[in-house]
Amino acid sequence: QVQLVESGGGLVQPGGSLRLSCAVSRSSVGINRMAWYRQAPGKEREFVASITRGVSTNYADSVKGRFTISRDAAKNTVYLQMNSLIPEDTGVYYCNALYSVTSYWGKGTLVTVSS
Image (cartoon, rainbow, N blue to C red; front, side):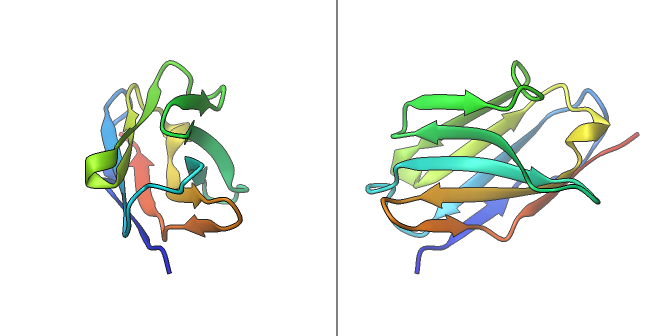
């Protein structure tokens, strides 16, 4: 069973930055796409960012220009750099890995943006 472990969440003031990490329990070889989703209190889970085949990136309109997704294949880790944070970014952030026929999810890390 593939395991994904998120880290880096916490409390930050508006305008601040955080970097989330997602460590994968095995080599990233075989992963077609990795992505970050988030779920705000009382809201549906929504797409945030993705990286496909380790190269092509995609972002939700709400985070374009502020968030950056990247990977370090040697460390089997995917990152989400979050800058210029706003209260609407608050939520539990989940890492997702999509293989050819199977999708895996982490348990999430909480990000709270508040003054």
